[in-house]
Amino acid sequence: MQDALHALGFDYSVEELPDSTRTAAEAAQAVGCQVGQIVKSLVFMTRRSQRPILVIASGANRVNEQSIGQLLGEAIEKADAEFIRQATGFAIGGVPPVGHATQLETWIDEDLLCFDPVWAAAGTPNAVFALAPQDLVTMTDGRVVCVK
Image 1 (cartoon, rainbow, N blue to C red):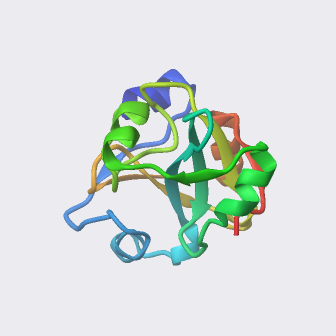
Image 2: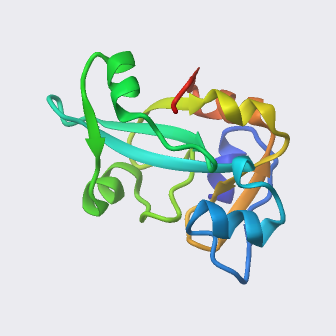
């Protein structure tokens, strides 16, 4: 993950933590921040075309799948673990916002822009990195929307 960040031109440092960061609550506790500062990288699948869609949400928010589907013009559903691993190259609980196996259309929770820094997964259930929320938008080429 560190190499992917550098390849994108960002100097953020990946940290391996002794505690799990698999859930937003665990990550917030491990790094000592608010749950809202945690970047959840959630992979969904479009129902008709079976495309992977990345929704980057604040750890405090639940994604409104119907709302995202309306923005896409196609309904979405939660993807299973195998679909997520194939699309991203990572397992659930460690999916980072960048460095995926395939190019993912990305939607970013506008609430993340209220925090600085935010904390994102870095490829494993114990690895994270802190970053500025605007850099999250830049590095993912994501579209900022209301996801809740």
